Length: 210
Ligand code: MG
Figure (cartoon, rainbow, N blue to C red):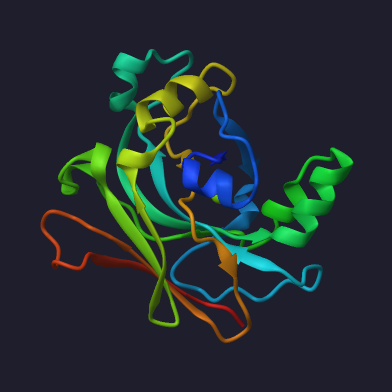
């Protein structure tokens, strides 16, 4: 399976890192060894001193496809999850300055925190999904898919021009503003608002940094 990731897909996040708002999706990948599931803790990597969380909604691909047209894209994903795109920000900055690929900053073991998936039918409107991340019980990131620069359907269509989508592939769809550092002992909790869940949203993911 592939883990496809989209960078800078919320304008307020692009701005907070002093990056331009992109005209095309920024695409990168993580290896499957990056997956961190079942609410397992993340052990702070030894090669960074600035480990960041990036809260993201994640889509699961449900059928194979290449060159998917935007009007059919909705047929290619049917489940959603909460993900954390863990990033070694200092390493990423060094890679960017040198013009190097940034896999070591974004694709290391455990860098793809992922909750269980639920049917996308459980959200009221996929163009207005609210999600948020708590760090030590305080909300640090809040996102709403109405603020996406590139919609889910557009992303599916765009990515499938380059990479054949396979059933089971997943797509991290980008993070809103509010990314920040974690320290050992921090607890991250990810919530998504579902139409059949409690008012404040449903807890999807819980991850302790050790
Ligand atoms: Mg990200």
